[in-house]
Length: 97
Image (cartoon, rainbow, N blue to C red; front, side):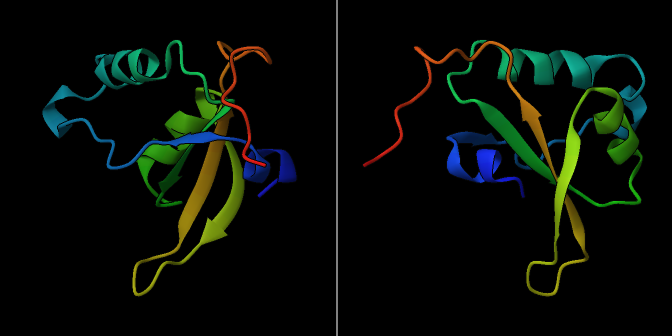
């Protein structure tokens, strides 16, 4: 993971899914945009199964693959990050220390 992402405050997006019969209507994008709007963190991160359809969607939405992980007995996951444009230097959460 790039040092600028490691060192910064981040929002972790966990367990994000849209029901299969609702996919393709823009619901996921609108919900994710709403979640990320106005965040003070500089970065958002998430993990996704590399072969999942969602991986290509995140690529199109500007997320970038920054690492891979294999937690415990789970399958390998792609770690992705997105720089949040609403964050400015004055608004970011101060780093400890």
